[in-house]
Image (cartoon, rainbow, N blue to C red):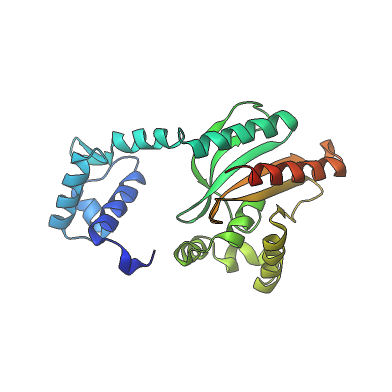
Length: 246
């Protein structure tokens, strides 16, 4: 959504929640107003509304994230979408218990991991707090670069992970990276091209019925424990899981 289509007060309120959430020790009203570059009266009115809704709470004169955020976050994983994701990861884990299975979604700053089953805790689903995924080295991150179309997200991703700092040593040039991403678009599957003698890291994109990119399913496993035929079987299973997701 273009910035001029957004409701200004809502944008400011969202910014306040994000700023407070990044301060474990809470914030005073004056500190929050300064951090958000808002007039004190504007900040006060927004905070009063957010406190009334449970999105912020005030304790001993300091502002903290409210219980409503926690409740909504917990409810998020009860949706059919994430229940399906957990079922897919459990199935993959049963087939390849030596591998780590992951599920990630496009977020405000690129791909964010929401679920994982690690090889050292088979059958245990870890629900993650939208853990950011580096864009240039991981299979899931590369799929984000391939299929995220929101220009604002891509801009923030570049600001957070500048290619000149995080990507140049891996890809040598943007043209080389773009050639790889074009291959990803065609194959709808990414095998991370780094440390291939140690780890096999593969991910596939998930699209909704309208064709919108909605998620990534991936596996990561030590090469020594598998044969090439195992990897091909993994690729087929991942593609099938993605195709049958919706």
